[in-house]
Length: 512
Image 1: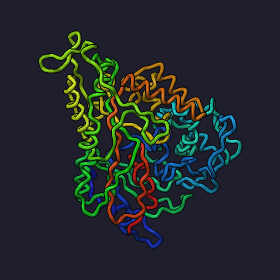
Image 2: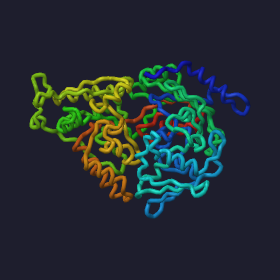
Image 3: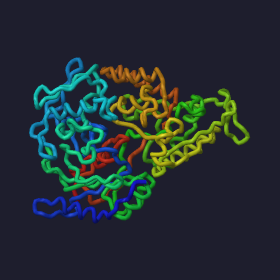
Image 4: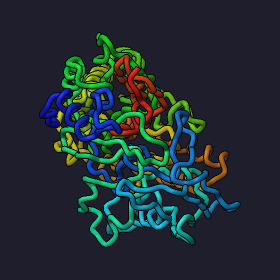
């Protein structure tokens, strides 16, 4: 469990107010917003994966996303242009932009950021996201040119990556740099302090190119345990907090926001296990789970059934509800206790979930009950993430992923055979030549119809192989104080903790 805040929210507000005076030399607590989330980044460096898909509060990309997730210019003066063959992308930088330390943004910073991601010596989780990129150059201080191996349709969306200052990192070991804990960006907020397991304190960047933030500071509290986060919300410690749907009830003075997402939960099934490695068992489990009951009971209606990794809101979505399978015909015969077995192997497996996540725990218990009706014994086990990670190749896990931006994002690494067994990407070591070809075709083609055909094949093959049992798409549930103005929900991805959450535009928030 993450450590609790060592001081009360009121004390935090007072400390922040003292460190961020306004032009009159004083600041009220109302100038600070305290938000709480379960997840915490490992680093604050975008090159190493902070602020996935751009949102970070601390950094800006060449492009950003508005309330409708439409791309808008950010550090680029206008949306970058794409050549007729789709293989050259040119960005002109906005003039007068400075980093938090006052140094000017130049094209060299953009080149450094992207070449660092591509550098094999840098431990960037984003490298495969940019494997279509062959070069980044700066013909002059305000122009950046990207050269691609092939016409990659969603490349402009990759330009939301936060830009780091070259002078702060050049010549250093990026993996170990102090910049990763106390970074310098161009965003609306700059880092005052980061206490891992506790909080991130941000101060307004009054020189931000987008305009002076409407408030003086933001505190992001990291509270892993759902129930503890709810208790502290009831104690009045937060202005906004994300909670499991069942916990977000009975709060006076707060408004509940149920935000649509592309964030799914599902059961990752390892291919090396003698039970979950059997496709018939996987398909039987896929057909047995009662997704609608999970939405009603576990999510309190804040979601919808999930049958695959491409959300129903996407133009690439293909419906594929599972069909029942005959386990008897496949040799899995029920014993006296109702649990099936084949060649002496009982149809049983362990299902891990993070113990502090109440929603995943309830989903694991629901899967356990549904599986038993099909003669499959599931043993749920709540663990810490440190205990979960080394076991993901061998034991099933309630996982979450998903993105509203493009089907290439996440799925390429989560289901691609080349990533088998690589951490949280394809931890169950699923491999399929058909899936790999479809994912690569979707990535290589710029033509919308060819991409739709590729992702239709991908979803159909995934349904046939059932390496995951997809359960639900979530609505992220937040509580926000009634006196807060400026809240603007938008469709969210799975990764959303620090910045890509309901408070993505917190620089515009004010008190009513």
